Image 1 (cartoon, helix red, strand yellow):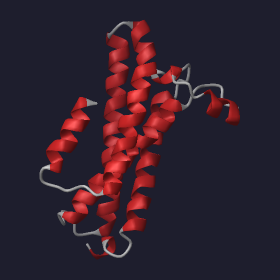
Image 2 (image 1 turned 135 degrees about the horizontal axis):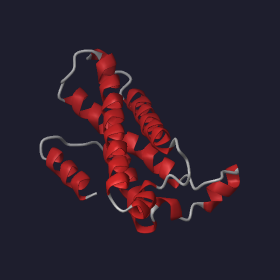
Image 3 (image 1 turned 180 degrees about the vertical axis):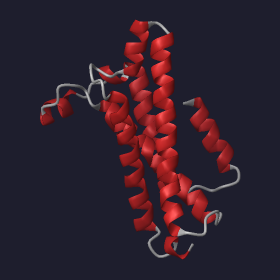
Image 4 (image 1 turned 90 degrees about the vertical axis):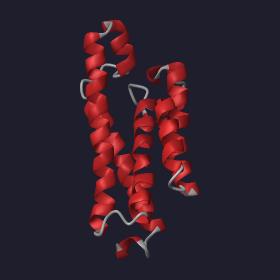
Amino acid sequence: MFLIIASIAWIGRSHAFTTMSYTMMFFLLALHTIGGHYTFAEVPFDWVTDAFGFDRNHYDRVSHFSVGFYAFPIAEILHRKKMVNRSWILYAFPIFSIMTVAGAYEVFEWQYAILGDPDAGIAVLGSQGDIWDAQKDILADTLGACFAMLTFAWIHRRTATSC
């Protein structure tokens, strides 16, 4: 969490983020702070579990979805600094960046579970018995990035196409 805040502050020295970027970045920080307090599997999210008839607590999926929101500030930097000359790259690069970070994190998390204390590893993974948890987490990150890019496209619909 500290690294994310430090990175935002460092990048913010040379790039003035918009209110929307800060809002989207806030979601990850807030949701992960709550998840870190309770552990993601234990966050009191029962009302969603009960409302949709889920077998497990999906708070971690919502948190992973918020990871994808960082595609918005990535696109904002690319667009404002004119770092790309094709609009499709402006939209694709942030999504692929989020997918890459998500995949790398899931590999790190897996290695921690294998090399560390097995009981602690299971608690950190928060998979709750789902063998496809890592893949679903990466999908949630990617869908969050797609949502962020749709939001970016909607906000910048006139200017983003003129890359």
